[in-house]
Image (cartoon, rainbow, N blue to C red; front, side):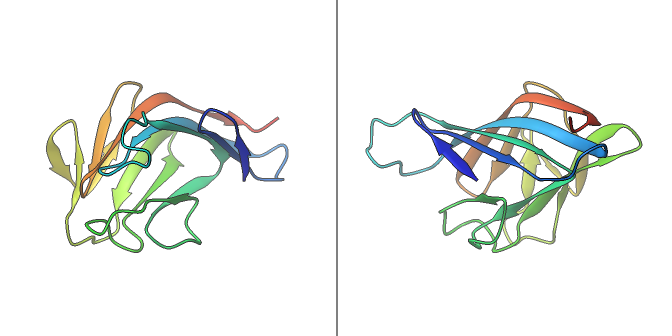
Length: 127
């Protein structure tokens, strides 16, 4: 992962000529440091994105109410989906608890006390 200034993170796999999920997520942590910090923007271009508190996840969230492997975002049948991985707190999209949900731009995801907004969401060739 490359960490750019102004809280922008970019992760891209080295796979070429394969179908990739491209998604940009604004992450609002419950207790940011410094306290006046706004959301951090994370941009992913890869087949799937693992989310949770484990450092090995693509999107690591520092929130005690989020599970180690909380959810994954992936492509299936030309749509981008978020799938809850049996987390304790559950996954909400636009205020509704889900097991699986097709994502679109503007959706708000709640994982524990962390809020995530989908800024961009597409699927296609990872060139």
